[in-house]
Image 1 (cartoon, each protein chain N blue to C red):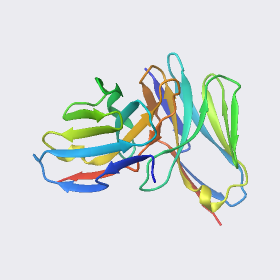
Image 2 (cartoon, chains in turn red, purple):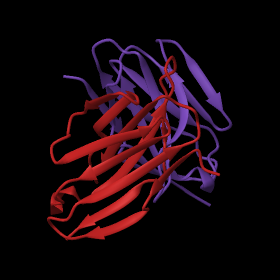
Image 3 (cartoon, rainbow over the protein chains, first blue to last red):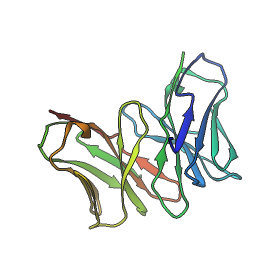
Length: 112
Length: 109
């Protein structure tokens, strides 16, 4: 079984709809991240969380919110989706004391 | 401004034809440099972490090296299954990771 899972894997939604992307991990890591990936751009950080009570904005947090329901679960919400939020979204984890990140399989989101 | 630049953007090799991918970086306070492999439709897969200039890491046909300004990912005698996008990232703070846009590698049989 995959260590980092994301649901859904693909989603098409309409402008203005609220949508939630979910991430779960079995790696036992305390740190979790949400990134988006666009063609021609590197991965960009949306939000990160170092433990259940710690939530922080990344470089592109406008239009997004997150919830850390448990150490193993981190959800990303788009409050009112817009077409330029069409992208690949990745969840990642890392452990305190190490620096490498482990990524989920991604969610391909299309906003029409 | 922290920045990561990867070159070339795309590379086509014949099977067995060795080559190198480059990752140039400008960052204040490097904590680590990372290489990932990303296959189409999948998330990045961690390959290596390098922490200081002069460090080298190897895994199968891949070898990563680090200087104060750049890192190289050397691919020796590549096979078609090595075809993927290779991403470089640097960590400059507790949470700040800067990713390059990747090198798309295609190895022809």
